[in-house]
Length: 88
Image (cartoon, rainbow, N blue to C red):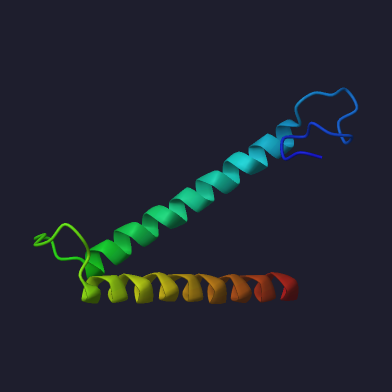
């Protein structure tokens, strides 16, 4: 079975609109997370005045840590929301 429903689950052989909508929503969410990471970590780690074409070591380490912290917080918030939803 494919992501877009072209498999045995759609008897008419048509496109599964529900799966397409889910895929679009997932792409939107992933794009939003990526854009928030770029915006947040860029403003925290990279000077507004570019001195070099590449990241220096300090900027690179800062970005690595920023992204790691972003995902760690995102994971913890997700866990809290799941446990709150399970208890409701």
